[in-house]
Image 1 (cartoon, one colour):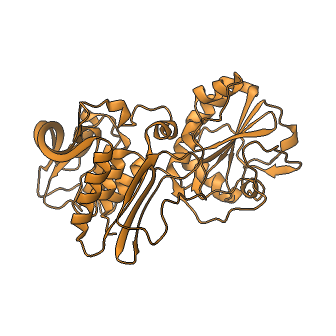
Image 2 (cartoon, rainbow, N blue to C red):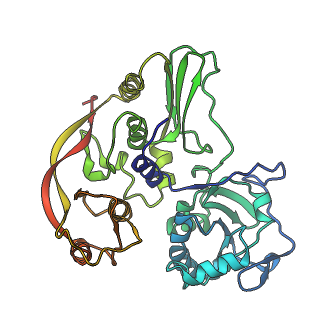
Image 3 (cartoon, rainbow, N blue to C red):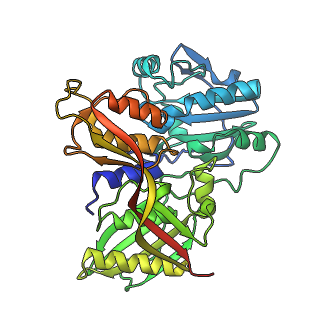
Length: 398
């Protein structure tokens, strides 16, 4: 399937998981198994004897230094460790070398002040808890594995629930090796929509089976599913919440921006879908039919519309800019990343001749700092209301 760069960014935005090849070990521990490690493990600063750890709750946080979500979680996890003290032990674990992790931690803003013990060169825990994606978190309470989740489940609420004796049986499970089976390869032109399947990864698939094309989505939510489908037949901007219009629907059921744990939100609002369409149809015909079928099953209607919305408009001030850098990133990528990393920013529209021009921005936290940073390199920024394309989702049940 042909997916443009911006569409890939959109998918990464909704599914912030770094994937690596790894086979599942037959000796892997499962939820409910007893957990025992009888030897020392290497850390950044030395080693620790795991049997000497006496907290009620141990949280094994598997990470890689090139996993953005993993690294951004370090300040939060440090605060949680301080808040709960010796009752818990958050233990980051990396398969990378001590030198690689140590050098990275010294330079990165998120890890410079880290106080957690960090296991490196791991060849013990990864065999007990195989995984493909990072972050990957294992919860051990009083010597027993009680949950295996994504990193966003490491919250104050989750920890309090465990320490209060509440069950984790309904928590979303992270299992990178299971796959949902709907139909065999001889299926007719048909489709199915089912509820979220706990324990399966969130995936999108497209393959050719005989004279049919199969589209399969496992544990996804509606808006990212629509973006994924439409990205193969039309150019989409970064679909922030300002580009979504819900009619007769609760925003909390479709947008996960305010969710404390996106894994838990997805478990409550996700679904699985599979459909088969003729290979002889054009991709646009198949996608339109897929969207109509999927949304009709949900009693929804989906369309695109042009509507007015607040934007930040970027224009070039001067053709001769002495501050033009020779390196950096394109202005298009820089502004896209600002939108991704700042959920409260409105859409940023570029009205410039060359969106590949390299720029270096200073610290940007709001409109004023963005305007000043862009002005320093020869661009003008203004707040305006402009007609932009939005996806409209309407409730047909009302």
